[in-house]
Structure formats: structure tokens, C-alpha cells
Image (tube, rainbow, N blue to C red; front, side):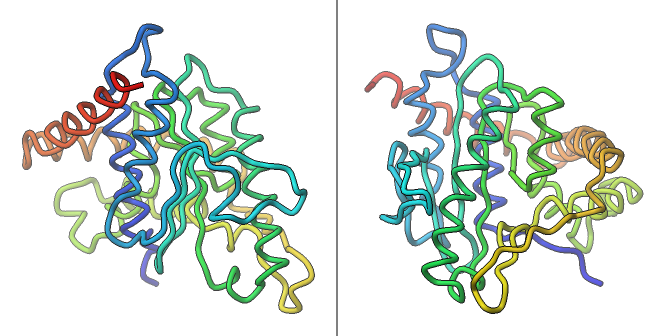
Length: 265
């Protein structure tokens, strides 16, 4: 069976979030200005394949509100034929499990409303919640994101969709350890499923069925964290060896854009 390959729109966005976080110029608090950070992250949605976008600070999702009627503010969203992305962007010293839980709740509320309004259209789409942090995330936050299907981007490690796409490449084992690649495919695939796979809409359109994802037990999540760390080092070493300066150049461009936004704030 061919490994799952996340869409390019998602992997490209997550890669740039990682690079931006690695090279983000610090503000007065030692980290990027919060509003400038949100704007810089949402600005990364301007890429081929995402034909609709909304900027940071917009309430709702492309004009739609959640099932509860509560106004949920997002730090950006993008949508196209291959992927939809919801963004939460944080520039703070320490992320908490509560930050992840609130983001998950907002996405679930909007997803429930979309399923009620257009079950078939929502069922056929593919949405990913993406949490972007300017600071390294602690292990409990990393575990929770993996378990909930939330893509986490921070400056310390390549995001899971980026690594899974690399691992699924037919010639990846020519440059990266074969055992590590196999483990990445096995462990990362369940965490990279879109919202529609996590909350399946029933055929009658009247209920949501939560996937239990038994393969995402505590042991597997711990293994996934280890593989993410190890494969990140291998991929970054590959770029240093075979494509020196490629990632650094892109990161410098992104950091400059962030600095300009901070100065204009």
C-alpha cells in the first residue's frame, strides 16, 4: 500500500512556519511581537493551491460561524481544492495544554456547523488545524497535538506532515535511514489525517462519529515524538550536505517579512 502523502499546500505552509519560527527576530520580550507574528504566519497562506484566504483576527471561517453561535477568532485560514488550513499562532514563552484545547474546541465548533449546513460538501473536503508557535513546545503539548490531529509547528523540529511527505518519497531511502523512514510512515500517518477522518460525518448527515485511533496510544505517541526528533536531524543534515544554504535563504526572507510587520505595527 502506498504511504499517505499530505498535500503540498499543507506541507509547504508547515515548512515555512518552521523556518519562520527558527529565524524569527526577537521583540522586546525576547520573542516576536504577537500581532506581527500572527500576520506573518497568515501571510504564508499566499501560495498556489489555496484560492481562498482570510487574515489574522477574522471571526468565524469565511463568513460562517460555529454551531454554538459563539464568535471564534482565528489567526488565519486558507482553502483550496486539495486542502483547508485553520491557524492558531502563538508567540509566548510557554504553550499549555489549555491553548491546544481551546483551539481544538473552536475547530470542532466550526466543523459541526459546516457538517450541519452542508454534510456532503464538508465530507468531501479535507481540513487540517495547524498550531504555530514561535517557541519550542513542551512534550505534553506535542503529545496532545498528535493525539488530536493538530499539526504543530515550532522552531525545534520539522512538522510531522513535512517529514511524512519526505518519508513517503520513493527514493527517500537513498539519503535517509530506511528504518527511520518506515517508522515515520507507520507512526505519522494516523496523526496527519484531516478533520474529516477524525470526525466522520454519518451518511444521513445527522451525527459525527469520532474515530478512536487505537494506534495512537501513549506508547505510539512517545515513539512518534522520538522519530520526529531523529528524522528532523537527518533531514536537516541532508540539506546542509546536499543543498547548503537553501533552507537558510528561505528562512532569512521569511524573518525579514516578519521584521517589517513588527516595525509597521
